Length: 222
Image 1 (cartoon, rainbow, N blue to C red):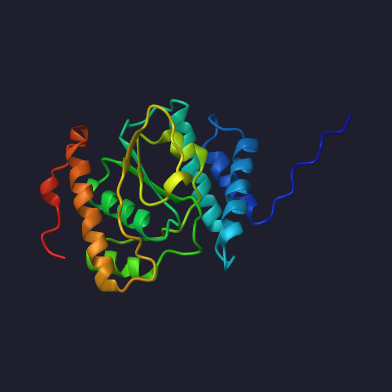
Image 2 (tube, rainbow, N blue to C red; image 1 turned 120 degrees about the horizontal axis):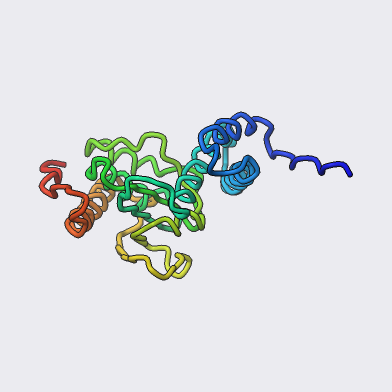
């Protein structure tokens, strides 16, 4: 009996990323699992993409985050850092700002993720500007779809205006930050939203004593 042919990739360039991840997660995840997650990540991103130039690279980034989350769920030996997930509708404004600010201030003591229930095509340029002014580099962040692995791996899920679309799982700590959506807002308004989120983050860090983060690291000037 002949073996069934391997599934056809939606983009043949995904093969090199799958090979890299297969090497990275050798002994933990099968090549089939990795190919399934990379393909699924690509298709989810393609659904909302206006420009497909970077989809292959972004799919590998998203699959890596999902594999790391899956490894955590399955009890992979790790550092046991608290894991915080920010969720909003489009993952283009509020949740991106919150994730970037927390990662900046936590200094590696918290694993931070963000996602959207209906991810946009790109991060709002005014959000990038407001963060840059505050000394926070958004780097290569991009709107990501909400996936089961990332939700299940989170210790704290913080919702930011996604309503009933946000998932609720038992055993997680849930917080809701009712912050204004920066979409279409001028930078003066977005700066205020940024500072409001940062105040929430100060409270969050104070509730995570195990992270040994001094909340006095709060920015003095904006």
